[in-house]
Image (tube, rainbow, N blue to C red):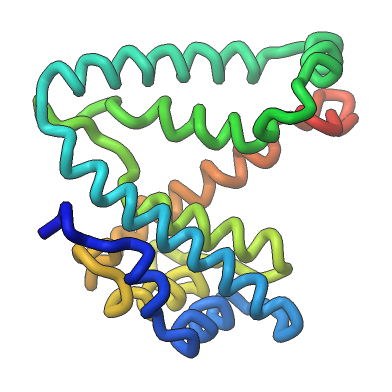
Length: 209
């Protein structure tokens, strides 16, 4: 059944009005609604594809390989975090023009650094499809002037409202009925940390890194 799941067909069949409700829950301005919905569709696609890929990981050899990658990503993140302003300047000048952006690289490294940190033997742990979706919702709010708020103790906020609207929309129970609000709040904090990472001690913003 999973092998036969057509992600493209699913995306085409999504209820446009429901997707608009989701981005409106994030307080996206009306004039940016269309662009935000398009971005949401991308996030839903990546979330579903993540869910499908995760079901393939159940061998100890896969887990061992991912643990090595996670360790390498953690080490690289640590080196970047203590990088001096001069080193950041050199990295900025050396960055390939046609490469992915530094922000995209850091986001990928953060994901890789946690992909196999813990969990049951033979099955690597990651933020999974829900974590991917949360990251996209936060990105939508940031890009289009919305709000992705969450209060874990009261299980409330605009991020919770948006996810609740997606509960019946997405397959494979990607959005559970009982949201792990504590984890979602931590993911949001980590997204904020990523955005702040390259502000140097003298408060000079490195433009590309």
